[in-house]
Length: 282
Image (cartoon, rainbow, N blue to C red; front, top):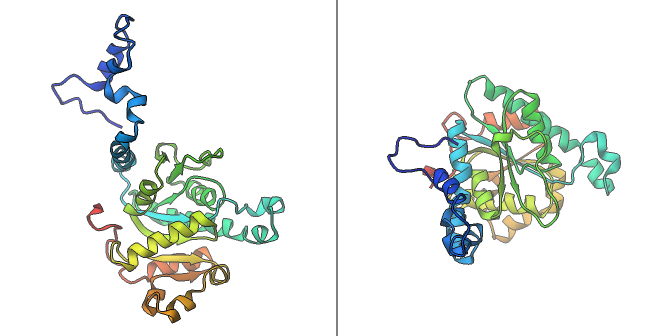
């Protein structure tokens, strides 16, 4: 990120360096003497949570703005879904069968990125959670097309590292799930859901809720694998019970292939208009 050198004031980095060179005394070794913005213990206090939330919102937003990212296409999907080449290593027969969606995610990201590169701008940039499985496939397809992609990783109790296909300058790490999910949707021109588990379901229903309640524009919302999703969720039962409106079933479409998904994006209602995500990015 660039630093503003137009200010007449001494910059923060210089003072951090200067502060480390002062004589070591009882006073300078005391935690109270540390610069507040360079004091990890202070920044991690419970009372500073609002500041950490703001920082976690601002850091990726500023980086994406400076990189020139205009819009994104978001891929949600299971971290456990293997590539077709590794499906024999899957822990269940079903996971092995779902490996076809790794390939569809890779192919979809390739097609979207190839088309986006024709504009010469950073539009419809593939965005994933930055991990393995479907996420890896999305970042991989974008890289194979010669484009960039975004990875929004998160610190988990078990070891997790970004996949090697994410553009390094656009690979972010989060502490707060809520801020991470907000970043997924802030620039979204489309949301694509592949088979997955709790995390995928959480991301899917939050995005659908935002669209259903008018808190987010109606962007193309595509569910890959109708047989999987109709087995996991009884959508018709929700409409028949009246807990959702039947019209809500039109908020999304089922697709099976990358080509079908690209076509659905092109003929989606309002596809000819400039689509954002949350109006005003507020």
